[in-house]
Amino acid sequence: MRHIIKSSLRQLVADRTAFLLCLAILLGGIIYIIYVAINLSPSDLQLATRYTSYGETHFYRNKWYYLLSFVGFGLIYITAHIGMVTKLVVANMKQLAHAMGWLSLVVLLMMYVYTYYVLGIAYLS
Image 1 (tube, one colour):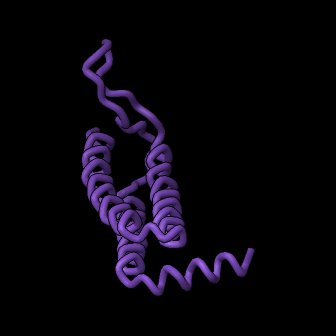
Image 2 (cartoon, one colour):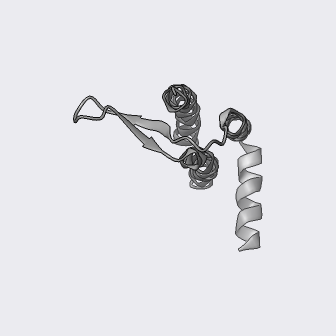
Image 3 (tube, rainbow, N blue to C red):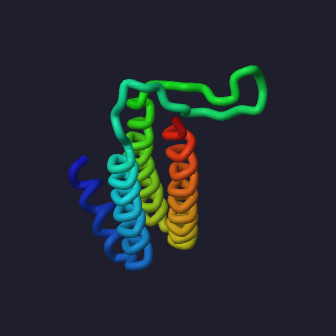
């Protein structure tokens, strides 16, 4: 198992573009996690965590620690996307690995925007 991981990492480092994309995903994901962790503020009040135009109540409330799931999502995101890019490089699908890396960065940007708006709704009160 250790040999498989080492050889996969060697192949990833040999492909400079994929390696730089993985570093960008890692750094962007860590910055995302720090951004979410800094913007969380514990309180006894329930936060608006979801909005819908259907039903009588438009804002649904939850405890503040519901927003910790965004940190967990960031960790899973980093692990899964770097793993997918590495797996594609090992399978000699370098062009697809590069496309996956770039699309991962686009999704990361969308995560920032989405989280910004969710945190804006959550701390309305």
